[in-house]
Length: 61
Ligand SMILES: [Zn+2]
Image 1 (cartoon, helix red, strand yellow):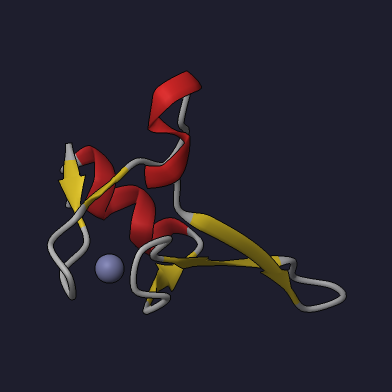
Image 2 (image 1 turned 30 degrees about the vertical axis):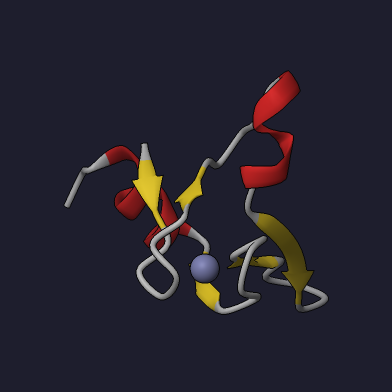
């Protein structure tokens, strides 16, 4: 499970059931590009934009 680099609490990209409180918040920015901003549900720090977080969560570079 991925951790927030700021508060070190567990975060999940897609939560199911009881993990709901650990699900990252997604906010879509921009009219054309639709860039997705992810933020930590615990400390509200921004974790990344678009594909950046995908790499962090899945462990891919
Ligand atoms: Zn956090």
